Length: 331
Image (cartoon, rainbow, N blue to C red; front, side):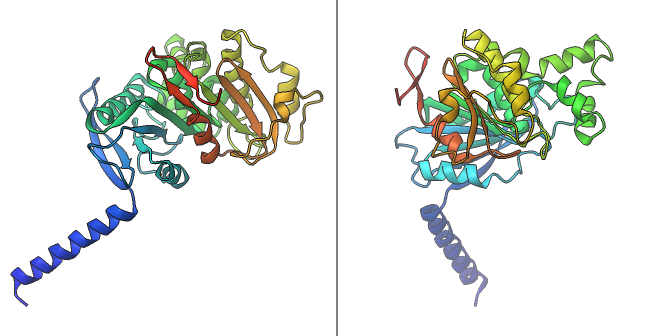
């Protein structure tokens, strides 16, 4: 067989493979986006729906955020699969990778990397500007809360699972673990070392900014066993919600309720009606569910985990109106 014929056959087989792949799976692309702050090239993955077309209808987009110690190469199968099922665009930015250096861990550079990746996606693809969603688990939950509070104008709705809301309190728990070392590497030292270090902890902690997130319907969720079998106590989710509740002039989770639920077998003595809700997307026992403005917090039977089906069920309810407000389509 001649080299020319061999080349033609190989090219034909490759073309057939591409056509088969395009017909049965999403198109996953690794892109680089120039940082608008320091000019560096920052990677992201973008996955387009099977039937995406440059002339077709605009699609909702999910900006999914990797966990505390991971990076853009993290596998996120359940979230990708749910985007596939719904026909959404999936964007997975690097935002400076693991939280073990100053440019990561909620830094201004990391925040801007997420916004730069979103701007790139909006420019290059047919994104439905009325349905721009944000979600993450653990360190991704931390960054979801931070982005919703520091940059609320970009998001239609957000979902944060088992996220860290206060780096100082998390360092208190993990001073002797790898997470404590990673925080010190990111902020310059231990809390209380000096005013500059303390400012770094504050600027990277969502709990200090969530009063600015009221525009964004924010779903905060944590498994009741986290902090015991996992690394992030449920107090991070409950304290984050209480900041929103105060800003929205709603009833916060009380200190007594928080104490009761902070033991693995702890249960509310006098649950509210919302605490008894059934959530068929979550499919877990709910021990606490409270609402403030358009946001909510849920403590469920589980550990350090995020449940994609429940997150998407929440996000899909909301759309952004022409005046910039976000509305629950179920109401």
